[in-house]
Length: 167
Image (tube, rainbow, N blue to C red; front, side, top):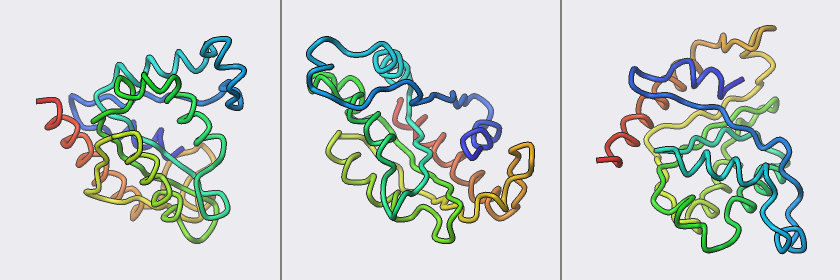
């Protein structure tokens, strides 16, 4: 829901496409040896075609969700693809969680991964939406004005960062 809200807030000239990690298998070297799975290859090609990558993360037990990290691990395979997929790609991270702490710990945990992959993370604003069930309505619309303001600031700043890095 936070990603859909961000896409709706994109400034003129910016498109936020929503991708999914659905269908990506658990990483397994034996599977990789048989070839990159189609769901992984399709997501990888979508990332390669972008000017920037916005990760919208929940927080599980104070860290990165395993299935999300698994998807990033697959996108980095084979290792020779890392430069095409990640190197110097602008990346922003926001998150929402049903808990009270927001997603600060998850976002911090992503930094080591993003650094290892050689991305160009943007740190100009933060969105760590806590109590997600209370900030979205029954239709999935972001109703909390404070979080809306934070997200709008983030989306505008990240879009500008991505645009500047394209030049």
